[in-house]
Amino acid sequence: MRCNEVFTIYLLNLHTEPVSIAVMNVLVVEDDKRIAHVLKQGLAEDGHSVFLAHRGDEGAELIKSEHFDVVVLDIMLPGLDGMSVLKQVRAHKCAVPILMLTARDSMPDVVRGLDLGADDYLTKPFQLEVLLARVRAVGRRGHTGTTNELKVGRLVMDRSQRIVRHDLREIGLTKKEFVLLELLMRRAGQVVTRSQLIEAGWGYDADVSDNSIDFYIYSLRSKISGEGATSCIRTVRSLGYLLMEPQ
Image 1 (tube, rainbow, N blue to C red):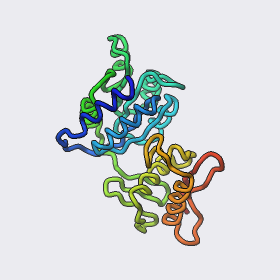
Image 2 (tube, one colour; image 1 turned 120 degrees about the vertical axis):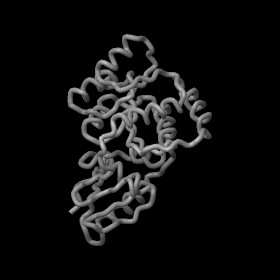
Image 3 (cartoon, rainbow, N blue to C red; image 1 turned 135 degrees about the vertical axis):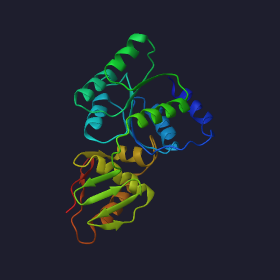
Image 4 (cartoon, one colour; image 1 turned 30 degrees about the vertical axis):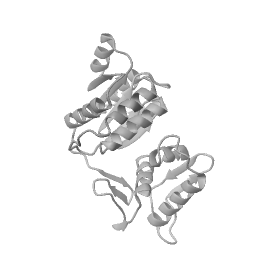
């Protein structure tokens, strides 16, 4: 499906009547970055927190290691195809609802995906409002009452109330800082690249300077650690940033 087709569908659905929904963490695994960005915009408009992966192997690791309420998984992916990702995460006993997204429309592919553990199946091209409804539906079926709370040591983020605390001390963050910190906390102990931070905070292919990223990281370090304390956000030269357990 061409990106302009998805984008046209997206624009046509911006002014539909609002629907009461539960906020969910949604992972989109799609190798076409333009399509992934449009899907991210649409899901964010629907009230969800959206994370992106562009390779199957990256998506599999994220699904197995982090909490998501729904996964939108393309079949044609580099590194590991969507069917292999699905098979791997189900073998790992990961029960997150998965909506398969593919240009294939043959019955054997539909049957195989469902037999491997997919919760639903959507064929390109599609209307964005249909995808949003399917995401809401599989999210309701797979809801387990899990918490919206993230913890890294004594650093706690309550997503539902948009509150961050360190040692019971509430930390005031801007909207952008909150989004960037959420990504760092979800990938605690892993290097987060500048491009991943830009994609999370500003969107795919946004023109964001290194100075802007440095400013937000400096601000987060100062607010989380406090004056005179060792920073929990480390710079990994030429790679990105790493969130360690704050002391």
